[in-house]
Image (cartoon, rainbow, N blue to C red):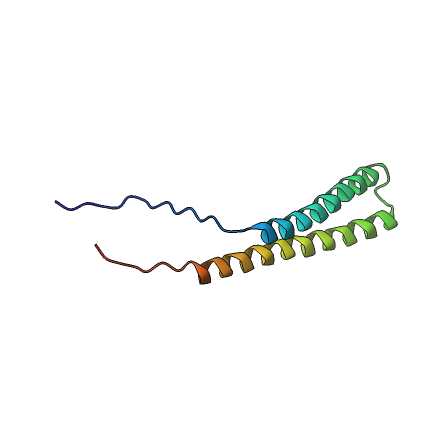
Length: 93
């Protein structure tokens, strides 16, 4: 009779303080930018032809893209470090 492994759960008690801090800072910046974008969008509804507001919106959208990219890079770096540290040997049963 053969047995099958249905799933493996691995819990690692590592220190993730630096990752949490980095993500918290990026998330805080992103939330601030999103709040500013909401405000600009509300003002644009009242004055859709305002070129200053359109320029501000364009600048804020660029910041949001930059911050999102920074968050993604932080997560990629953490994943690469985790993969490098926690490589598990493969065995056949």
